[in-house]
Image (cartoon, rainbow, N blue to C red):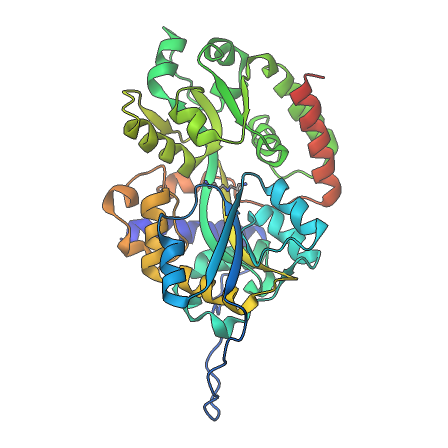
Length: 387
Ligand code: SPD
């Protein structure tokens, strides 16, 4: 068990060192105030909750359990990219109460007043969260942990259909750095025959391309995006799919190598087996590191059902629900109380709960200015068009 938590301490050390701060315990739940007992607040909201989350991120039956227990009817929609969620929030009146942005986008959303501060008194299970992860979020994204509660974390990496890749590469050995499979023409020219897929999102692809060429993955400098797209242009003709359905593209064999998210690649492996495929699919751990992400629950500024939203957040933060997410969705939970309930085959999968020495190599998330995101989108769209 000790070993399992090493990564988490490693993370807070890395991030806090970068901020020039000493690690301090983070109060994730307010201390009870000694006063006359208050009457329990009555929730008079209509029994509805509108949630907008990433696709393939919630265990089967979890919404139904919440509905049964609370009588609150949940409308649950999904999105595929941070850009899609962000556009809805910026437009306003999204109708959603809970959204789940990646922390890279959550920061500008907090700064832009698109998310409301949580009422921590309504979320007693905040105490279940890993203080090291909360410290990381406080230092980099959400000062005081006022707005965000982690849903899960993971990393952007290379996923492969081992069987198909071995066949396409023939005598050529696998590279030491797995990013070569998607960015180096010697490899892409061979792998295009079995399908190379990239996530269809500027803020997913440009950061990994920047990292590959030795730049800061979270550079806000448009000149760096030009260098990244110059590198990408060399492999453009070999990329078959810009995917919004990556799990199925990899599981079905449409793509043999992908830039995707760690948990999704593990889900693709499970799905391929369910589909009776003999091909072996796996998430790789590139030698130069993969890009960590945190996906975070937040309540929209104009939420119509904030009390129901707090009730759902508290429900999700129960240790057993957090563990269910890891067990079924293949993403590590930030819920420390839930970790002991994670099945051994998930807890010991090094591409889900990575080991401390690999964790130390990974790139922690940061964020981009609005101008940088726009420049990145332009650079990415020209790359896609082959300009
Ligand atoms: N199937 C759920 C995928 C969640 C991915 N979130 C990634 C955010 C990374 N920038």
